[in-house]
Image (cartoon, rainbow, N blue to C red):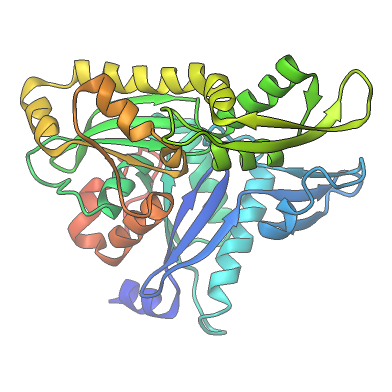
Length: 350
């Protein structure tokens, strides 16, 4: 009864704590925050100047003593204090809309499926320090599957590929648990790096991460497009030191991304090969589901289908799937408690 009163007074939330983007789902209201996982810090004073969208605007545009940084690398906390501040910012942003007497909220956080117990404890401690009353963790692919309304609690195989900013995760789910998991630290950020490296190697052109991401979204592809596309790539010529603009095609960018995309596809194929036969039969019938921002790379679904010989589809609104799934668990915690990550460090629910 006491816990129900606390839940009424607080705004319980689910957080998709991503390398590139953080989404926050508020109980009874849906996704209300969708901001970059970026924090701007004054290195002279240690003061945090901006978080989220405002901090991302500063990337590449700050003086030397101000650094716009991501506190998570490859889905794992790299700077505990900055992550705590970022989580506190998001928690308080939600809570202040509730009521002045709001109690501390219960929080569900999506984490990569192969993080260590130490890394899980780091996430949990950061959330508790940021103001959470109770903290539950859920593997991101599991949350994405629930967000896609897949029958994860049934005795049948579901193969989910979650491609985010820092990691690509391939899991097979059955009976509310993860049967097989493979994680690859090659995802959206690595594709941006590939484009930056390609520009330097091919054209001696230095471009920024923002430009690389725009090109990836604009003409990046895993399979040939029906119509050839071109896009201007602007940067600084490393030989002359002067600004330069070069026209690149989708074929050029596909060549730049080929190795990393191939590694992601090979990881999916490896997971298919290791899936138990009965569950594989279910996967062949139901298909492979792609989720996460990286799944939107043009032609990736058709390439996976071609290589695995299994129908592959991108789920509806793949970017928000983890947040939606974690939100569904938050709304139905008693019924879906079994899908939460089993962690030694988590206290039993009060």
